[in-house]
Image (cartoon, rainbow over all chains, first blue to last red):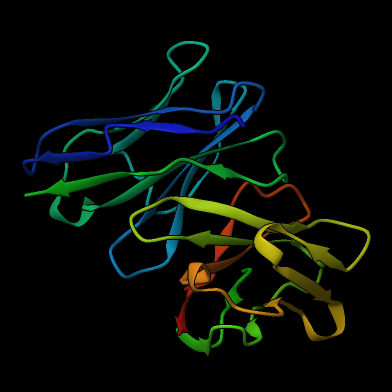
Length: 113
Length: 114
């Protein structure tokens, strides 16, 4: 069964550093998403991406965040200058359409020290 | 704004007992509804979804949920709990007007006692 994959599984970085989280969505999916889950809290929407542009973003997704689909398979989330409060599990997801079920990857645990 | 309420942050049942996890949403227009399960240190796995049609939907692992528009609810049930069902369960909704955002509830941790 096709699945969303994410790398790395765990990333430790120092405050102020840039990080790039990588995702490979399911191959025939057209919509891509990033969500995050701070430890002990609910899953929060960050951004959706379709047709090579952001279709919706939350208030969390400020200028420090960017997304890119650099080639036909990868989907990345970049945090330009990490803060302590960016520590969270980041989930990538993809779907066939904008309202279809999202299929989530296993997540990248980001720890900012 | 759309919101999702999951009553009970923790639910404890005995193995073999009925599982009932509650979810209510706030939209006046019936949204698309989902249940996800998260096992420890893993990602979110889709259990089931409701978009249109039959209001009782069956998912994986013996779970099912019923969409009740009059009650704005989408409760998740399983007739007989198994130890392997112990996990965190999230209800989520998306707006029918093509909002790309899934709104998650705060989750319910299911504990299964032997």
